[in-house]
Length: 429
Image 1 (cartoon, rainbow, N blue to C red):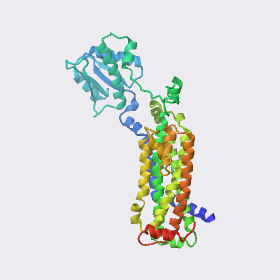
Image 2 (cartoon, rainbow, N blue to C red; image 1 turned 120 degrees about the horizontal axis):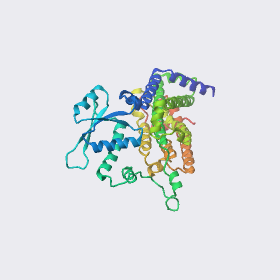
Image 3 (cartoon, one colour; image 1 turned 180 degrees about the vertical axis):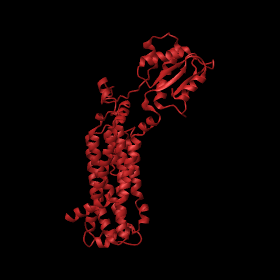
Image 4 (cartoon, one colour; image 1 turned 90 degrees about the vertical axis):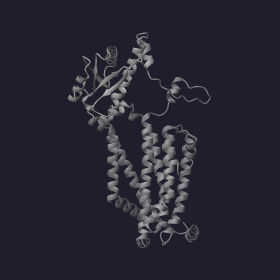
């Protein structure tokens, strides 16, 4: 046990001090931070912090539309833009105000004489309309359009009902086949939106860290073997102690990276400007399903142990680092398949594909995170999935141990399956 702890400590400390690990982790932390603050940077450079955009309009061009638009904005109160009216019909005045920076853009109504409502152009110094201004303008002009076309034949309530968007609420049938009640429909409406982001992040983290740590395990074993250092190491530490020591040491590295990324995400989400973004998107951190985080950690550890044993076994069979990429390609394809199954099933967490994947050990760490976070997963399925995964780890761990013990001393070309089986029979695990 002392030798195993020594290998674990050496692997962990040796890897976290390498430049490649530090640079990779730092780059990923920066990318995560930049990605989470992109809306703030866009708003910062577009001058969004100065308040709602100021939109100009020539009052005499379409008096009825301008009056309706102004009345709509007064009813709404605080909106995505403010309206500035200008007298006369000379567009040059609006252009001068735009160049002076007094307005962010102005509306131009183009009446072709055929349609009941004119087409609208937004003129500014930019190639496109800011998203907040665009959505606010569309909502306001949609209401004004309905009011102008109906010409006062509808009441305010009818007009509001006409312009209100239609939302489709999915309601699941209960066990008897009848529609759920209003309260049941509310509970069956689905998980909170924040959980989609959590599950998406967990799937990406699982794939990324498994690939990083797995490749590091295989590369380190191959490098020790190709440089003949392995012959010296096995005189003091058994091959099995080396293998499991490397696997556990890399597991600690993977967990360290998860905690680092979780801390970076938490810090960025707690920033005041990101809090306002979360509020505008109806994302509440209190709605996060803690069960998903606990299961995600459990499945990460188990999934890592399964893949890591295979990476170590494959790495022990390769004598040159140039051949490593081709050798680990099957494991890479398995992890990619698990990643794509999880990502493309976010919108259908109760699909048959995902249900079957729950009982396939190479896919279950990802598919079960999706189902537990977004779908309707019975407890027995989670328990069965964990049992199958644990049994698979024991089997592949035993198989990898036999391969590793044999392969670390096989040099030259990669052994065939027949040669490998023959060599493995000489050792008992």
